[in-house]
Length: 120
Image 1 (tube, rainbow, N blue to C red):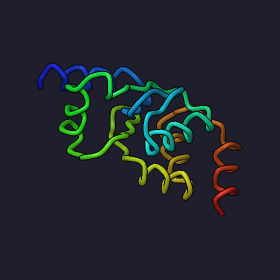
Image 2 (image 1 turned 135 degrees about the vertical axis):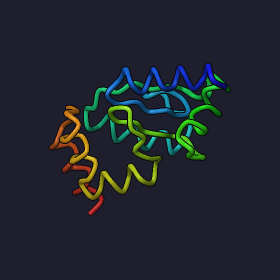
Image 3 (image 1 turned 45 degrees about the horizontal axis):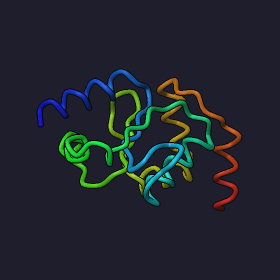
Image 4 (image 1 turned 120 degrees about the vertical axis):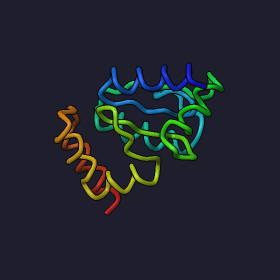
């Protein structure tokens, strides 16, 4: 499992935003992954997607790495942010915008506002 851990660590440190998900950003394979990818895609965030269904070692390894039992998992600037419920809450509260602003991650603020308006 140390090889998976090394690959995960290298990926989260080499990319500003990483989403470990079931499927890909263009073709999510589960509703939770689809929701988080949809938010990031809609907000125009440049992120790296890692399909855990393509590699069993990564699928288990990411759970061990974060000590978080579910997928998807979002990382910003090397730090674990959360899964679907947390990302949804952060998006609706504006907290995700704040995290992106503080981390220097480019995103479409108007799109973020539209998500909140549609869910108000």
